[in-house]
Length: 177
Image 1 (cartoon, helix red, strand yellow):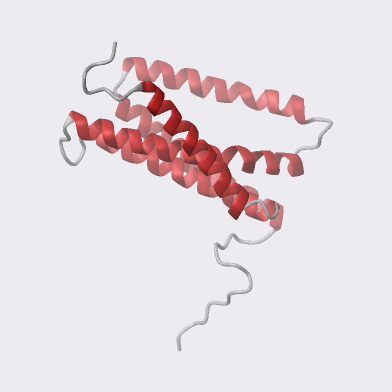
Image 2 (cartoon, rainbow, N blue to C red):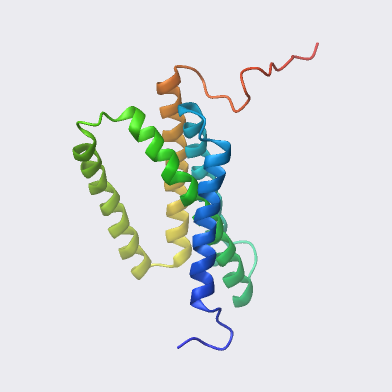
């Protein structure tokens, strides 16, 4: 049973699903023009994931301040909404990149082999969550998100053979004299 101050679980689930749809719409409107934009979207998803898990880790760990339980729950809820937006951006971005990078004939086998380390990380996180504090698990997730961002930047460089720049190529930055 829910306590008197707990939010209705249906509302929470619906909010998560709306955020996934919002992230998917952000990808469709802003990033679906090409392969380069999909790589940028993947990096954005990594940044949003890193921010949401890092903030949750800090709030749960009481590093800087001691927060009330209500503030912790509210902040965690909004950070999980941000995480769901990043998930909504991630799935269409990775699907687009996968279709261009991994050959169709080998895609199923390659993706199955990539699921093995993912499942190992998931099991390790669940074991750590059982034996440790939640803020350590979220800090670990934030570190893995940083690795995600670095891998996405590396993929962008390999695909396009140039240093990543968030500025469009038509914009030239003038040096001051």
